[in-house]
Length: 458
Image (cartoon, rainbow, N blue to C red):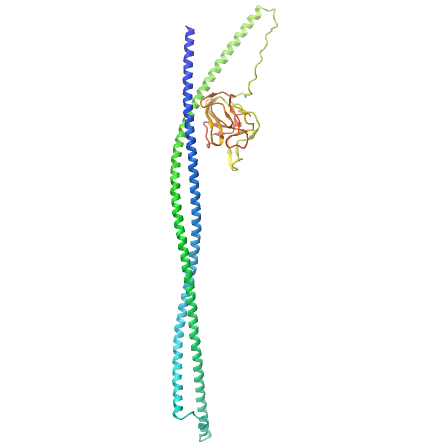
């Protein structure tokens, strides 16, 4: 009866274990599918981001060109304003010249009037002289004086007449010369001002034409910029939708990782119970062995010397005591913290510990747990993640740049158990193992990563 009961319990245990394993394998497959789908979405997101960046770059180039043209237009506006000021000055000077011309015309009219009046006086004198029969003899006038006083009077009159004639002739000649000069000056000033006005008007038309051309280019650039902005908005909307889908997948993956974390917790509880059972069995065995030894010693005291030989044991891999052990043996080449990335040459946070080992070196699980990822992951190259439950607290360990993966998602692994081999895959400058520890589930950008030296003695 006891034997049948034991057989029944064993059968139930096997069934429960197979059910658990099949459920774990199925969920592991689902998690892998979701992770693969997430990778596709992330790749699409990257492509969309590249497209958005390209559109942004083109928009910036158009805006730069537009700003350059606007600066040129602003400069042209300044030149046009300056030219308009010059045109206004010329027009004012033309107006002043016109006023001068008006005054000159008035002066010319006055001169012409004086010249005409003198002409009349001169003509009258000529007529008088012709009537009297020739030239007036000033000598006869003087000799016809009756007395010296009369001679003086006659001489004064003749001198006055002669001076008047000379003055009239001189003034007439000066006025005629002045008239010609003023006419020439007016014509020259007017011609110069008109010529300058014509040049400035031509310059104004030329600047206005250039401004129109620049405005057309600005309109064209603004149309292209609007088109690019519309295309960019479309890409951003698509990227937003992809991000939402990706975010939803991340939630699903996170939920599945939480479920695997619970599996790890249950596995830890099971291991502890099994360890307790093994310890109790070992204690009972030791007690029985001691009792048997005492009984054997009492029955055959003559054979005090024992021929029992201790069997030789194969040494186990060097595994540290405690919950954690080093995933590989080798020199530490790059520690946790900020550094200049060896490939991208920018300041980036190194979220783990690098161990410099050749390609193909054995890599072991740093603690008991459940494999939550096993495959390529971007710059990490070939990557393994193991979810651990240690004293009820969840951790995730990461093993990157592997050349070989020896486990699958959902598989239970023990501390120090082989999981893969080191390599140089992904964004790597040489063979090494990149090892991370996260408190809770893995996060690519969050604060979950901690310095592995907090837990592991390398």
